[in-house]
Length: 236
Image (cartoon, rainbow, N blue to C red; front, side, top):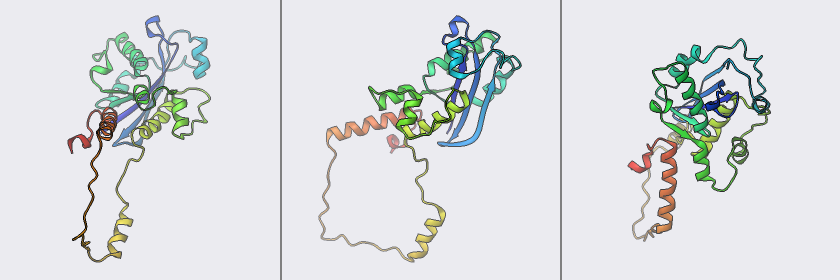
């Protein structure tokens, strides 16, 4: 399973008012592991940057004057995210800006959601932590993820943090098997398989209550949403 954690920085808050993307940052996950394969680019927005936005990411129009236009990186970006599930915090914001950039260049793919599944981690966080703050900073604090380098927002840095938050929210541990050395050691320590005799022992079977079954189903729903509805527990 290939997933891409994605974030953008922009000149302002509303693409419908002409604001543009100035940075794209992506982190690749394969089978819930960061691969080290990342994508990052700065873009020349060809317009002024709102003061409030500049205070968030620290980038000025002058900083970006020599950067490529979106049209110049669109192909490499689309190739990177192809066939991956996109993981985005507050997805409508980033998807809105990216779709606008694709429309402006007349792309054959005018909408990312038409060719990729999108997981919005803000929605997921609100389901897991209702009534609590669920910003990226708040989630980092909740899950013990070090975000001390986040004095200013950056798309690649935020994608790396979001990748850790996403993995923590959806199970944390990415491998359940014992290491080979530990398995081999166990085999050497025991040369035979022993069967425990339980004859004459009455085993107590405790059935789950309706409330426990509902709680279990609710948790499976969360897993399904985090994994594109492919939870093996449903099939089991």
